[in-house]
Image (cartoon, rainbow, N blue to C red; front, side, top):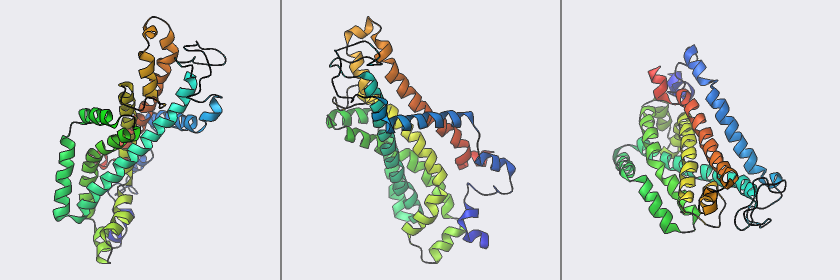
Length: 301
C-alpha cells in the first residue's frame, strides 16, 4: 500500500531500478554520442552568449568592402554590402538557439495539454483530443510550412510558431500512450481520492513521471526545428534583413561569383558546417538518451 502511495516507486521509468543492475546502468549512460552531442550543444550556447565578445563588429554593420576576402580584420571576409561574415556566423548561433528553445518548448507544452491532460480526464475530452491529434498528424508538414512562410512574409516569428505547432501531434501521441499507463497507477488514484484535481495531478504526478520522455521529445524536436528553419530561410522564406545561418546560405548562393571562385570556402562552408554540427549535437543527445529515458526501450530490454 505504501508503494502505491508514492510516485517515486511506481513510475514506469523507475520500476525495478533499485534491484536491477541493468536498469541502473541505463539510468547513467556513458555513451560517446552523449558526450559529443553535449559538447556541440555547449559550444552553441557559449558562442551564442559570448557573441559580442567574439567579434568587434555587429552582424548588420558595413565594415568592409563588398566581397572582401578573408583577412586579419575580417576572418571570413565580407558579403555584398560589406558586412562581416564571421559576425553573422557568430550571431546566427543566437537565432538557432532561440528557434530550438521556442519551437521545442511550444511543441512539448502543447503536447502535454493535448495528450497528457485529456488522457487523465478520459471520456469525451480524451476522444476529442485524440481525433485532433490524428488530424494534425495527417496534415502535410512541409507544404504547410512553405505556405505559412510565404504568407507570413518578413515575420520570422510566425514560421517558428508553425514549426512548434507541427511538433505537437507526434509528441502528444507518445506522451498520451504513456499517460494512459500512468493513469492506472495506484498513486494517481490515491491523489484523486484525496481530492486532487486534474491540474494538480498533472502538475505533481504525471508531468514529473513523464519528465524523461518530455526531455527526449524536446531535444529531438529542437534539433529538427533548427534544420527546418534553416531550410526555409535558405529557400528565402524568412526575414531578409535577419541574421541566421540559412539566410547566409541563401545570400551566398545568390551570387554568381560563388560558383567560379573560392568564395564558397569562406561564405558557404562555415554556415553549412554550423547547421550540420548543431543538428548533429541535438541528434546525438536524443539518440543517447532514448534507450535510457524512453520506457519502450526499458520494456524491450
